[in-house]
Image (cartoon, rainbow, N blue to C red; front, side):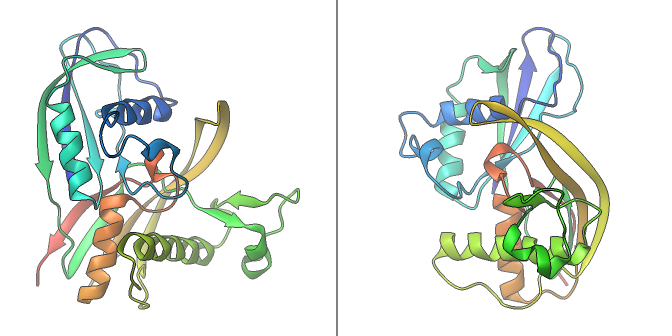
Length: 250
C-alpha cells in the first residue's frame, strides 16, 4: 500500500540529489508522538520506502511536486495519512511546501506483471561471498556494493536473499523457495552521496526492470511485499522504491 502526496511549493526550491536524509527526517518527524515514534532508532529493517520528489527538477513558487510512500504495514500508512492531513507547512530541507492532497493507492501484483525501480536498488555483498562470486576487491573491505563489473548472478542472489529475509521477519513465516527474479533488464548504475551517521558517503546503486510471468500465489505474495517495502537495502532512506508498470490478471 502507498500514499501519493501532492505538495505546492511556497517558494522557489532547488532540487538536490543529496536530500535522502532530509526526506527521511520529514517522515520520521510525522511519526513523533505515535506508536512509530521509536522507529528511527530501531535496528534492522523499517519496512517502508519512499520515492524521490517528482518531477525531479527545480520548482518555482506555486508549482506541484509529489512524493510516494509505501509500506506493507497498513496501520503505518494510516498513521502517516492522518498526520499529513494535519500538516500546515511541510519543511523538507531548505524547501517549504503546502500539502494539497493525500491519496491512498493499492497497486497489486498479479500473475503477470512488470516492476521498475523508481529509485536505485542498493545491494551490498559481504566478504564471505567474495569467493563465491569471483570478487577480488582492492582492499579487504567488509563488503562491496554491487556494481556492473560484478556478475548479474551475484546481484540476483543477494536480492532474493534480502527479500526473503525481510519477508520472513515481517510475516514471521517462511516465504516461497521458488526462484523470484528470472527476467530482468539492467538499466544503469548510479552513485549517490548520502549522509550516514553524520558523514557523507558514496552509495552505489542500480536501476532495473523486472518482468514476471505465470507467478504462483506464493510468488505473488513475496513480490507484492517487495513492491510495498522496497527492493534491496536502505529502503528507509528511499532506495529500492518500486513502481508497477504493467499488471495482467490472467
